[in-house]
Length: 122
Image (cartoon, rainbow, N blue to C red; front, side, top):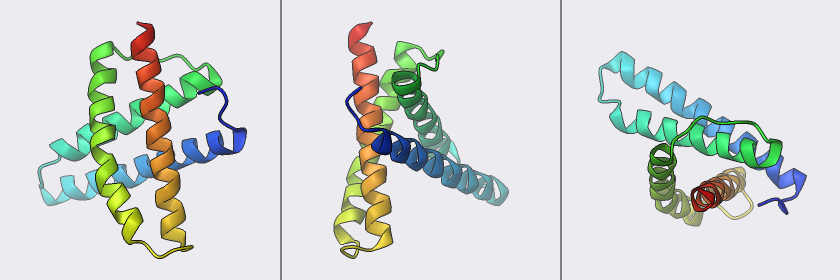
């Protein structure tokens, strides 16, 4: 994990931050419409944990998540991958959407890897 270039670290953190913002906006809209928000809340929590794990590994920022929190976040983040990979495969080659999805996939993979490393250490 430590051998990830600073550029990729920054891109991954920014990608997760962007995904979190989009999820927060979706949560707000769903709440206003009275829709069930359980799934988006679960994903948002997992994304926040993933971001915290990257910041923990690369910037030594402390976290207060339990092994149970980390395991659940890992499962949720892993569960997001197939739909993002499918959208990536369907996106136009060289287009901005393809680049965004590529960075999102990379960020999620790195977050899952960071969680795995932390779980193995405990």
